[in-house]
Amino acid sequence: MEVANPYLIFTGSQSQHLSEQICQHLGCRMGRLNLQRFADGEFAVRFEESIRGTDVFLVQSTNPTSDNLMELLLMIDAAKRASAHNITAVIPYFGWARQDRKDRPRVSIGAKLIADLLSVAGITRLITMDLHADQIQGFFDVPVDHLYGSTIFMEYIEKNLPLGNLVVATPDVGGTKRVNSYARHLGVPMVICHKSRIKANEVAEMRIIGDVEGKDVLLIDDIIDTAGTITRAADLMMENGAKSVRAIASHAVMSDPAAERIDGSALEELIVTDTIPYHKDCKKLKVLSVSGLIAESIKRVCLHESISSLYSF
Image (spheres, rainbow, N blue to C red):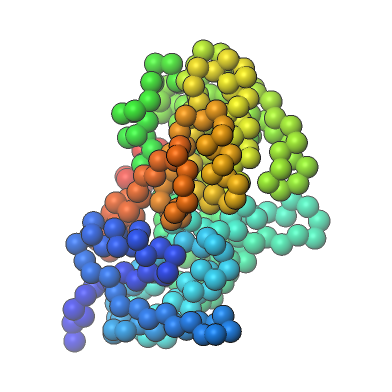
């Protein structure tokens, strides 16, 4: 018997709004899913329609981390047990990605553990965006479609920023490859901020490698957490003679006191995407939607078309 819908999109509680926008782009309805929560904190997932023989796309970012990840794992397990044909996890923000290697003795590699959990649960494909480290793709034994925020940001940069006087910068050396791609694509110079930390989320020292005097600086990062690094880098740019400083980042984790730091910093604006929903007040924050990019990726996966042609670089 032929399946009425060749694919269905379901959402976890964290990515409801983004999933609705994805469905609007695709011209399809949202799949019916029931999430039941119990008094002790446990929850159960049930698909409220048949998905036998169907390609299902389960949309869920994993921030805040533990509950949303567990919710996604239960969705995957339920889809596998309901005889879905293919199960694609769409994780716009992949949490634990900063734990991608053993950089000290006796530490876990969280990103590998999450990859193993998703694989054992039953995914047949992963769609994600701007992983903190590209090598995380190698933690999976299923196809990984790694989308890039540059596809979203480049249109905004070319329309709204003064390219003739622009310098792109990374707030830490780990983002050098990312910023170099923007510099080559835009044909502008790049600057590096070198930082040292006492502990996580606390910068001890930062200095600039390069010239920013009289320039409009664009800081580029993948994750804004407490905003300590990005705001300190912005202030340092202005202290070294920059004309203006803006920043872009794919994932707005925005742990407290990020909003207060950003509004009180030298940043003119911070442009982020909606991979993580943000509901607090931050006057300098501008949100661009990734729903169209993810929707097009889902469509191309279903049609067996190239996804790499979507990328700016």
